[in-house]
Length: 82
View 1 (cartoon, rainbow, N blue to C red):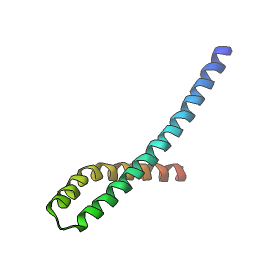
View 2: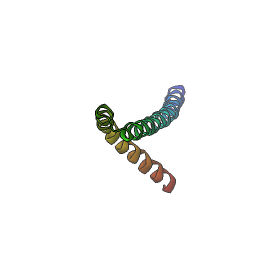
View 3: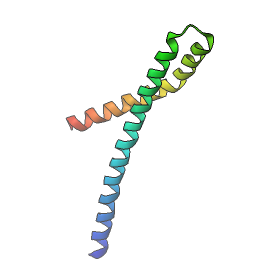
View 4: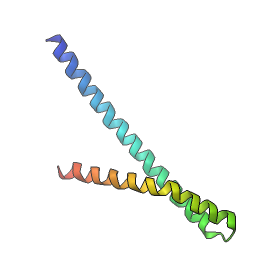
């Protein structure tokens, strides 16, 4: 009996901790995406060649972050509807 209670308690605590960590990682990913988008917009305004290169370089980081944002949004929508 003690082993069953201990196992279920550990499982519950681990699940809650994982959900909390997933929320933190999701918020960090969204903040990074916003930062990359803002930096790209600010560097894209300038007409210098180096600014345009930086803007193109930032696109490499933005595209995967957009995919992560879409996945997070879909998961949140599914959680609400379920």
